[in-house]
Length: 353
Length: 262
Ligand SMILES: Nc1ncnc2c1ncn2[C@@H]1O[C@H](COP(=O)(O)OP(=O)(O)OP(=O)(O)O)[C@@H](O)[C@H]1O
Ligand SMILES: [Mg+2]
Image 1: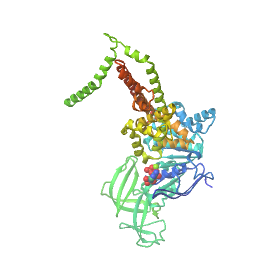
Image 2 (image 1 turned 135 degrees about the vertical axis):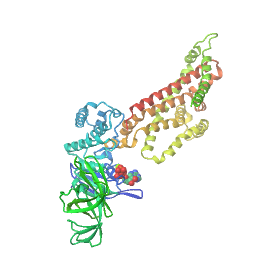
Image 3 (image 1 turned 45 degrees about the vertical axis):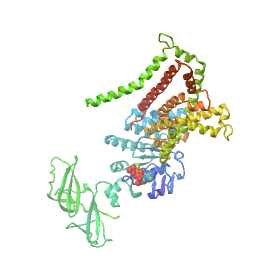
Image 4 (image 1 turned 30 degrees about the horizontal axis):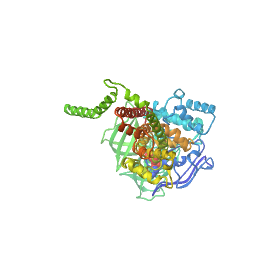
């Protein structure tokens, strides 16, 4: 039995169903991210785990106990909100102590626990500050300490970093992950930032329109997307339309060029159109590049992005982007130049929706 | 540019003259009780009047009860409307604005019909009952101001998320209301309280028709029978109102200072 189990969760607001048969089994101590575009139902599922919304169908179990009908204050869950939601009238200390006071713990124990929590987030010296006297990053760390102080069974975070600026976002997400590992707390983290999800999760749930499209490790999700949506949402994957020439030999035609796939397409028929995915870092222009496959096309644009140069070339009706690492002797491809992109056939994935 | 500035100053000057000249005149007159020189005799006479002390004390007490019970009614209502019934807000706002539209005299005649000593709920049958009725009528009168100021204060905090944050930490609703919401709308509660205080202290119609010894009817009585004291009383009443206003300013500035940054 998984630690946190969501079974056939459905949710409708009035006539519109926003979550469809959502299933998820989360092990104790796992760090799970819900990744998906705006409005796909991430927050709604999180709020159902917390008890703020009642599922229209399905069950939620934590540690073997049915939580589906429990009120939020009976669930022992920690939650961090996007807008911090610290109590403005309380000091940092009192904010962190709130859950412990509500639980009626003795004063001495509260004091010890709060100090321990403040140490964990490196804010011992700000215990007497009020929320309005602190930066957003500091406030969010206090919110994390407040959520963790009562030793919750599960920690929920709803886009906790999206109100912060880029630098703090990166350092704080690492801090959250490190604290999560240290405490071994089962965590669900909601984000629409794929880099965030890829960098800190044990497993990612890619959501699309109220459904889980794919559940897997960051490397699974990135390297082996199973649906077109996952392929296009995670990373900047190229989707290339190809026409099957010979299913048995695995050859397809892109524009007027024929190439052979490594993946079997024997189940398809000749003349059928299929979608192939190619990661932008898989290709290279260099003559010496390894790779058994080549596509020739005209350069549409070449953009200098700092550590990489992103080039887009037109192959038939497709535009294919690929990245080259920047180096001082790199020659930027010129627009309209005809170039040959080399890559391994194994990097071309067949998308089966 | 220059011209518009000139007219702006002119408008202010006219306004100031309009408001302050009568006030200055009243003040000057209130100092002339002693023949031939300025003195505070009229104020002395007012403050030493037993009736002044009694009626003022009575109105103060009524004001305190009005504020206490009014806020117990208004804060949870405003909270609940914001949290659970946002679609009811226009309706609730309309209801709280009614007392501004319906004249006090209509309300009090309604009361006398409904609660007279031969009715099912004979509030006016006893002094205590009448006092309760008076407090309730004051709550009605100050409802627009109390509700507005509390609701405005609630707008500055995210009531919903704070409630959820408290809830998920295990809090039940009395804790949420009194520890997490109430302290954060204190500035609104206080400004509502001061306006209410100013209204109740000067209110005439309700107290007179319910025949209670309040400050408003006393003002009227003195005004009809004495020469210099009414002016002194008017100045005192103004001072009380201004003090309330000043306190509102102070409270709201303090409130702004402690708000959390977004
Ligand atoms: N209380 C509600 N009443 C009606 N519809 C709602 C309610 N809450 C959410 N929805 C709808 O449910 C859908 C999913 O919303 P949800 O907030 O879960 O999205 P999300 O994935 O968290 O998006 P975002 O990344 O923008 O936060 C949206 O279409 C939204 O309009
Ligand atoms: Mg959301």
